[in-house]
Amino acid sequence: DLLLSNSCIPFLGSTEGLDFRTLLLDEERGRLLIGAKDHIFLLNLVDLNKNVKKIYWPAAKEKVELCKLAGKDAYTECANFIRVLQPYNRTHVYVCGTGAFHPLCGYLELG
Image (cartoon, rainbow, N blue to C red; front, side):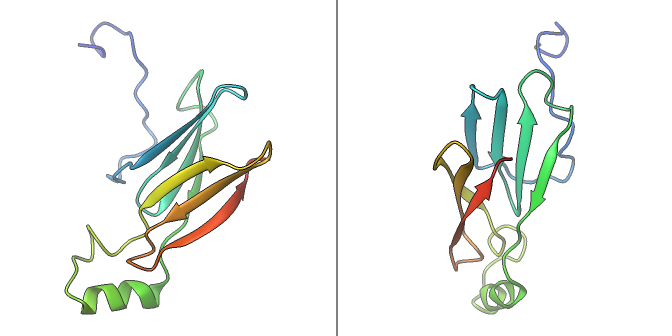
């Protein structure tokens, strides 16, 4: 209904089925950060499809192999699912992902 009434703009940047997990709204700068499977997206709130920035952040290959050897599903469990997007200061966001059952975190500079 929303598409038919032209009252929404769909995000076209993800045709890969990236399994979105977490969102962080930055109203001050007009941005939306989205945590997904192996990716972090930075979108413009005025037009979600304009100047989309995408960071590829997969789990280490060794960790993915260990995950598969433990009997986990390679596609649905052995990836880096971004779970935490937390403002740290005016220039950085604290980001954490599952890392194929070996969690990893870092700071993302929003420049």
